[in-house]
Image 1 (cartoon, one colour):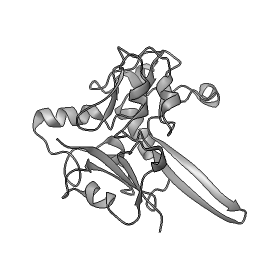
Image 2 (cartoon, helix red, strand yellow):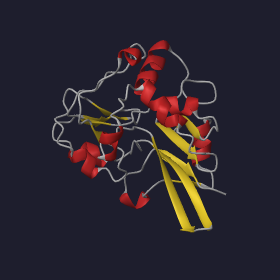
Image 3 (spheres, helix red, strand yellow):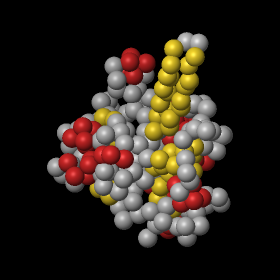
Image 4 (cartoon, one colour):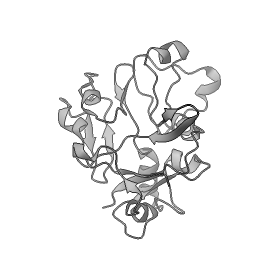
Length: 223
């Protein structure tokens, strides 16, 4: 059984936000508008964090794409009272939106802040409705949603007998779209895969490893 994971090269990320847009289009993530976004109700499954250190003019800026970490020991799964959040055998942490009651315990439990609550009934203008991905369900108001590693692509690839992962297989929308090739996706348990090789690089690290969640998303440090 594969274990799907991701490696993100921070040296390559330019914060162009192509991954964020590609994720929203692929997964039918609604735009909530400027006012709602300013109130902290923005929905983004793949967000690029910007961190600036130092004082002007001696500053350094880091760009950090942040999808769901799909932890091997996910605290969100442990706290969900209705088993709406669950971990698949291939390592993906998924959500059953029919079971989700919107209690948001999972949001509190997640140390990475990657889950968002859907405050509004999703609305898409007529011009956008025709572009909705029929393979991805539009989530209702009142549920928590997050990155799924584009699970619909993986499911269809498995059913169709297609290869999954780099360099020539099915990958996530963010991996496919990144113009700087900063995001890599594949099977962490396959020693021949690109992500497996990169996860063993001397620059590789995982966020907040002290939490014991064992993320399946690795980063390559700058330099």
